Image (cartoon, rainbow, N blue to C red; front, side):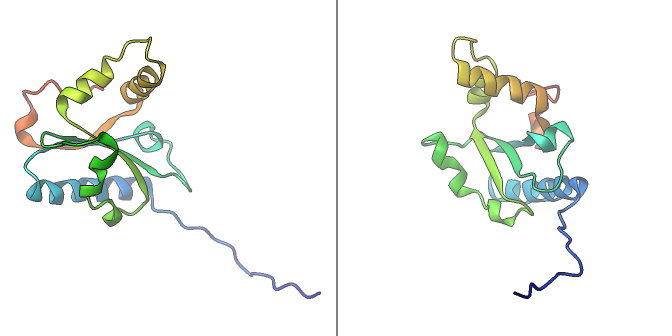
Length: 138
């Protein structure tokens, strides 16, 4: 049976610095529409700096106006405008602080807190956040 051969096989993926620039521009645009947006960060492979072909985008948004169940908060943000599919945490500053302080007895939350401490890289911050408890060293 004849098999059609491809002469070239190439998978193109956006370069990490272009993805981060797109996240920064997206966050700045969203901040114009939502004054509660305080910070946008990446974690996972983009936060660690080892993103490559097939990497998704893991975001954390600090939103002073976040309300409702945490798993449903992402629905009000147009993540489809970003260059990659993404998973997002949308938290208030207090929830962020509580998550990072999760006790070791809460294994899932503690593991997430460790990953965020290790990997989170803020790519956009609202200027008036400088006096906040959210710091860039997380």
